[in-house]
Length: 321
Image (cartoon, rainbow, N blue to C red; front, top):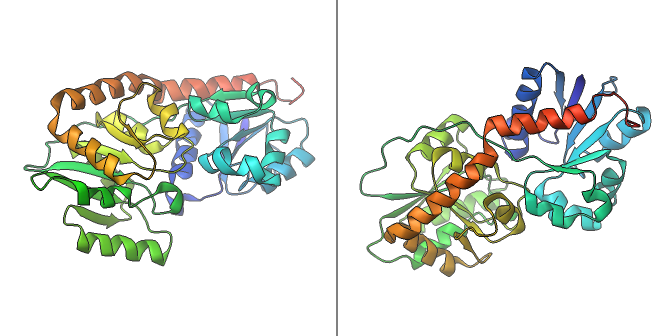
């Protein structure tokens, strides 16, 4: 099939949507499909469009549906789609109606959809190849925070939690991600100066981020909303346990019974959980075991199989089938 993958963010953004798009393009090409990747549809006839982001890709979705009404259209719902836009944005809502198929990136996302839309939705977990562990940093318990600095990520919650750690804690927090505003950058720099356990490393190449995962003891995902965080897949691939905010997107990735959730926006509870992970071997081992169990859902082989099944469902070439 000739497939067009639409993403609202290009390679220069290096965000989660772009990593998903690039990985899917490679997997679909490996399966024998011709794949074009673009930030907007250029009008060329294709057999299938897969568009990430119901709101931000709405123009491409609407134009494609009007010009190729018999060609299948799949919309992949992101965190801001699921937990904000489809409730109140007309373009996002229209994308749901126009789509012949929907994709969500974790199981709890299904709860956000109406029965009508849920019936045409597949769950495709994202993935990361195995990351070989490297020796841990001596004398430190290294906690990573990975993601661009924007409001939805609640990016400074872990830095604020560091103020509540015991004096004898060995925790060192390394924060990687580009600041999307001067205000975010200034806050990150200020916290780096004021909080001795916290360091903002800025925007790093993806390969460097993966090297940090290989040496890390823990990942914190403190987001206010997530569609299905790539960084969780990477932590699982590296055998790094996770402490996460108890939001739907994180629960859908890690499971309802995962013991490492903290209340959203509560840095004192986060500090308590970080301390427990550092000092309680049984708790740390439990986190590791639960993460190993979830890893099976987020391997490249599993993701590639799910993608092939998605495309096969539309391989007849028309939306009517």
